[in-house]
Image 1: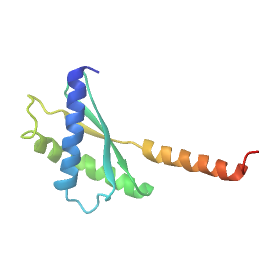
Image 2: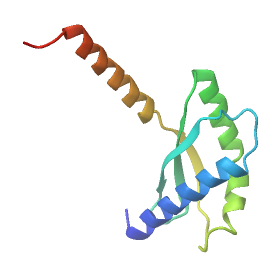
Image 3: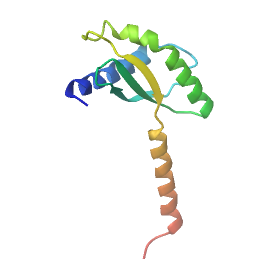
Image 4: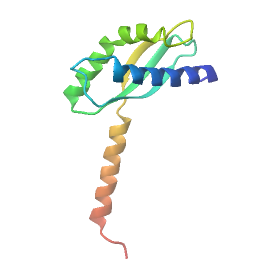
Length: 119
């Protein structure tokens, strides 16, 4: 990824996080939604926004639907905030890496306690 794409990815992550916290007011959106990373295409026209949604399967599904429905609103809201010619089209993807890491840590903790003290 080019340096320009990296800078745009980080800027989009920050601005979208701010938008989610302050301007997206949909009661169907779970409280614990965070943007983990943003990947921008080489031509800077497409952005994959990876989000982590804490909750059960139905909450995640509904949260993703709300985010996909709000993509147009967020795209328009980004225009005045960014000093770039084209604001990338936003595509939201569920990122379950945080929960996978948490599961791994719980498994490792369980192994530690089941093996007992080492001698």
